[in-house]
Image (cartoon, rainbow, N blue to C red):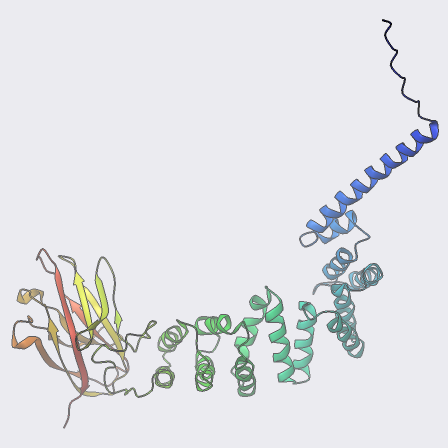
Length: 412
């Protein structure tokens, strides 16, 4: 049977080939543009000049280049170029807020404050998230002594920009020495902005004026605004290190009502704060030493264990005792050591002077009671009350508990 010849494919016309070629070229062109635009958008933050060369039609990228050219060290030529690019960016994308900010900043630099205000008002209508707009508004508010307006713009910037805390926290921290600014800041923070704890933590350890920080923290405490954990101890430590002793005690007394400067705090170990200040009991944990404040049968109890042949402080509390005579007494549980290895209480001055030692006897003796006296001389304004463990060659080292300790003026 004869084979049937396969049907031949129809030949395409020259016009069809031309159309296909044009489409292929267009697709390649669009692909190139798409790749260029994607690459430009990826590097817009790190290299806006190159990004603009890759995608000169993108208003957002053009706006970022105008922002770069209008920086603090820009020349007059740079600012003219930045203005041209900013206007181009707004023609390409009317919502390009960085371009509006560029025009506003350049107007301000040229001394056109009224024009700058009009431009930045338009910027704020477009978006509240532009950091340069917020920074200008802060400076403008400072110039007009508009403290509520300044803090409103601080609040907006800190809520809308990830880099704003690095820029603004040091400036705001340095301003709280002004009573009016501090009062307005307390009112702002009473509204619980999301940056509260971050700023308060910064202030505790890095604020330029520790005493102004204490005044701020006291005002916040009176408004029932909680401080972040660790802020109060950090501030008390700073105040003591800077020799602001009265300020340190005043702040501590505000956050710890009922304390008395003439006696040791928390004699029965019942407070046990999560983040103790130097004026609270602070267990010392070092070189394998175990020291904790725990709940006991009749309240709190201090428990410690020191490995054999090691010694040193296991518990401390800072004091601001006026010159005079003081008694110390309390009781222990579970201490069994040779006389040379018995722990003792000591009160020391900042220069290392010991004002005496009161040995804690074995707990089987006199029901574990200990008692003694210290004399605080003039010229020793701050003291450390410490329980010190002495090295022991016993296999178990030095272990024991203290269930109460009282340091107070000697009655006359």
